Amino acid sequence: MAYQFNGTSIEHDEEGFLEDIGQWSEDLANHIAQTEDLTMTPEHWEVVNFLREYYQEFQIAPAIRVLTKAMGKRLGAEKGNNKYLYELFPYGPAKQACKIAGLPKPTGCV
Amino acid sequence: MLHLVNKSPFERKNLDACLKHAKPGSAILLYEDAVYAALTGTAVTDTMTGAAGTFAVHVLEPDLAARGLGTDRLIAGVRPVDYGGFVDLTEKASSVQAWL
Amino acid sequence: MTDLTETDPAAGEQVVKRFMYVNRKAPHGTVYALEVLEMVLISAMFEQDVHVAFLDDGVFQLKKNQDPGRLEMKDFSKTYRALEGYGIEKIYVEQESLDDRGLAAADLVIPVEVIGRAAMTELMAEMDVVLSA
Image (cartoon, rainbow over all chains, first blue to last red; front, side, top):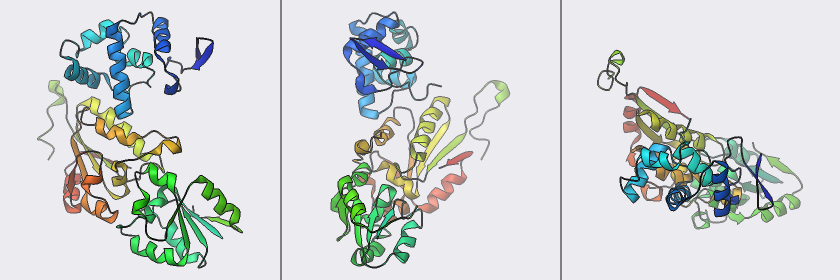
């Protein structure tokens, strides 16, 4: 399975997570978001960028509870909660946002 | 003869067996978890310091780096090699024995 | 030792058990270290009293400056630094294991509690569940 995008084919698993995180780009993120019926706003990008930084630092995608806690610490309580994140990513912030960010499925997400 | 060892000397006896059976002067390459045997300041340093005088002991540098170990911690006489050096050792050897 | 942490399941309260994950393998030669780490991260979701111990070759998992990129492997030594965010802060390293391997607490990627073998023995005995790999 693959995203057909800009004339290239980018492999993903059965749930849409990239096989190779190295193939991620902002354009691809927009494309994946479209396939999820999402339009990326600055608020979406804030979460996606946060996730990418987290992955860079720790080499894992955070579990949702860890994501909300870490976002709250950095960006304030109004953004570090489930409600805010689910409004942005209705199919689950950890799963959907990680997919758009090009990360693997979160560790601890069973 | 080139002897290949890839198990941690703290956990397994592969390196001991190799040292007991290898002919003086033969080459030994430590790679994967066996690179821990090449360090100063450990429980096997004395044994390996002796071995480095008897054998031509080499250690695979990418496996050291993967484990956060620099060549500055190597026992005197132990030579770091890269993958090219590994191939050279194999080509030079009349035969290769892997102590798996 | 069973009464203090357990509450009555019939009352709908969660039973909190003392878990210990014991790491005894060096990080890159086998898959054990990574598998245990993933288990620990998942266990953090279940609100248990999680302890993580490193002894024997397991202490090598925490060595600073690991660079397994050339082996085309992920540097999961960075992931130990995520444990704090997952609420896992009871991390113990055995002194004798460090000594045998020429390592000290300053060589490790995270702050840990370094304890002697006798104290590790006592700690293990206090656990409800110990998983060792």
